[in-house]
Image (tube, rainbow over all chains, first blue to last red; front, top):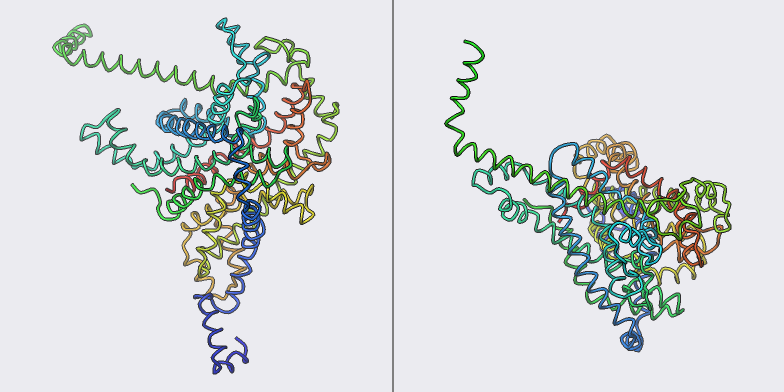
Length: 305
Length: 307
């Protein structure tokens, strides 16, 4: 504190100013407060320049109600909404339910389980692009590995997976599950490992084994985590671009788009950025409540046992 | 006592139990066999499921161009030619391959460094110095974490054009730092709770400035979290596609994934070269992931098991 501020104490405006700074300063003294501000400036700058500004810019771009009339009258957009719903309902739930079951398998002791887990997480460790390009070619009706294998091993003539809407969408969902199931399995495995063994021991004394143990001990303890993961997976999936872009390319005839790929298509292939933003914006009525619930859950509680 | 009579004695002792208890033992054994058989079946299914697409990449990379359009499930004449073509940039799509690889390394390295610096500084002020209203920063980070990055891509692209940063690697670095930092802050704050605040306070009483505490106490103690977050940021930057695709269009500025995706647009794409490129591109992150797997998963546990 300099001498000048000490002398200024008498004047009301200085007092107000001082209490304002004292409020922000909290228990930090002198130069510490300056340092605290300096340390937090980089992230605040990143947030303002690259999150807040694009968000407001996007909202401003999508301000015209006429845009939404254009969006809703577009048949491709209506298909996209249906695709997104199917993708969320099947993709998220299958993925997480299988991950929940598999995480139980990977709780088994022994080296074989460890080796299996190490191999099983491979799809998650492989970058998205090589994985999805490989799946795209694998599902090629004429030359792809899948149909070749079906023909050689079973004598079955496989369909052209990517040339028909529902098989293409199914292929995209399966690819998404292939890529991301290991990630959720690892998280649920960690959740299971954090359940203390004594709870299981006590349950055993009470006669809960096998399925009962899962239904009445494990699942209730994991339920909150499972819910949070479902919300998180839904949000991640709403923003998923790479799966559909590389596995189906949005085709055939733009019938397998998700909101993210359709937004990019409108903005760059049709050169209508405002229409692209408007497509993405229609997800907000779903996205905002999800974000609010999720932020509350993520901020407040640890996993409660 | 002879061995024979010992055996008889045992037989007698076992004899009466071979009723109910023996049957229960047999059932238990059969149940165990059934479980093991089921488990073995499950493992086989999982391995086929996991490895088919990966086998597909390797198989095509080992094939000759003509054999890609064939109907076999084994490479006809396996060879490493396509890898050689990629290494020597011997195809016109690949003429800048090593330059593009360098771009990917540069972007991933810068993103990792900046994420570590920015996130550790932020978590230090909020978690250790207890900046008043620091929760605003935490919430901003959390909000960024749950906004899908692809939804911001269009305005972000237009803004970068306004700034004159289009086709500049720094615009990609900015985008990736923006989307990787929130999770990093989250992990650092969780991990920082395990470090006693008294350490900072005693250093403060001894007259250490915040910078000294940050550099000498906070960072060394945070080393495990720094490794976990560094790995996370590196993999995120290496694997990201959408922003790199939108923001980098020049052949010399491009990164490997953008170049790789360009193959797809050509008719009769040279799939064997493409898959060889894909394998070379995938190896560094795979090696990083398996090297730091245990640290990563402890970091994930901290972030993921919150709920």
